[in-house]
Image 1 (cartoon, one colour):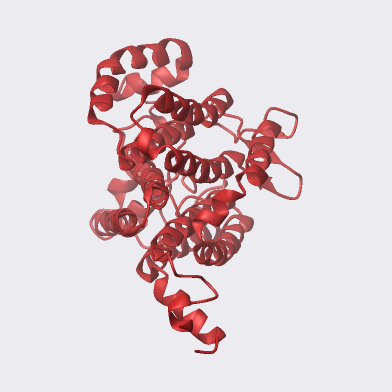
Image 2 (cartoon, rainbow, N blue to C red):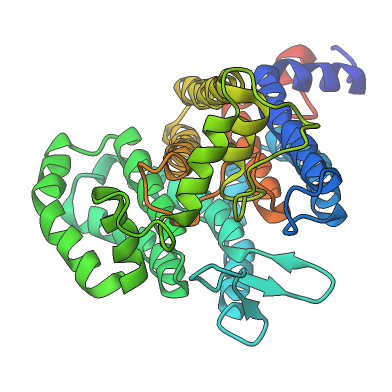
Amino acid sequence: MKHYDSSDSRTGLLKRLDIPLLVLISFCAGMSVLLLRTMWVQHITDEVDSNDWIVQLISMGLGLAGCVVVASIDYHKLARFWFLYVPVALGLVGLTFTSLGYGREGADDVNWIDFGFIQVQPSEILKLVFLITFSLHISKVTEKLNQPLHLFLLLMHAAIPAGIVAVQGDYGTAIIFASMTIFMLFAAGLSFWYLLGGAALMPLMIWAVWTYAFGEVHRGRIRVLLNPGTDPLGLEYQQDLGIAAVKSGNLFGKGLHSAEYVTVPEMHNDFIFAFIGEAFGFVGAVAVIVVLALICLRIFADSRAAKDTMGKTICMGVFAILFTHDIMNIGMVLKVMPVIGIPLPFFSAGGTAMLSMYLCVGLVISAYSHNKKKYRVFYDAEAAK
């Protein structure tokens, strides 16, 4: 009989952590802190103060610690306690409809809570909770997934959080929920015929959203993409400045201590990619895109290593979050997507978003590291024999 040794436990955990993935996301988070501090030191925009980069740094540290903790726990155990955190997430979202809820200046949605000493974005927490509960739901009905009744119930499950954030006016996050739903269902084995049926209904759904969900501002943001130059001082202004900032970086950028920067509204948040292009040029912007692509590919690879449907769908849900955020945010800055309030993961300012994404990656690593049924975080059954 082999005696238990806590050092063996820690070594076993480290071996099972996806270290390359942790390094990639922490590189992005570290770059975010550097960029935000540069904006503050260089007085590039009045939207950034000393608190922004400090909050980002603290969130990075807490996020990394939380990621490792979540990764060390079997995701099945986390899912069992859904009845504890689902009411909390829904309750926080509900508070956005009270006097505590507020929207960022210039934004169309009200999806933040101001507690006075801290500001929280509950939709980021809801995203994390949905990831766990939806993967659990799918795992319970995997064999019956393609039966209309069970698929309908799954779609109703997904419609609840998507509908709530849409009522808030946060259509960007609603799109993220829709993307997660699609990727997770197909990862679980949804029939291709449903995809064809959805494609056939797409024109009707687009018409319904355009007519009944979108306001005139949202329609206008799409119209200017189809007819560039029609509203350069209005709805196009921010995107035109974003493109100008990226172009001004040329091949290698202006660096982090230039005397001249193109200031873009929300360049610390949704338009931080514009500052990346301006500071580091075309080479730096492409390098960031490559790193983000590697993160997505790594998560996709981890989904292949997951031992069951729940682990696989968790990984693909996180893949959907990152992939959709990356495409829409960078497309928004380059004026090929409408401005819809989608931040760039691990780069855009926002403590709640940073923590949420680290915890999402923690779930991915949990699915990756617990792919052996006999493995336990603090006890290795094989080694004990």
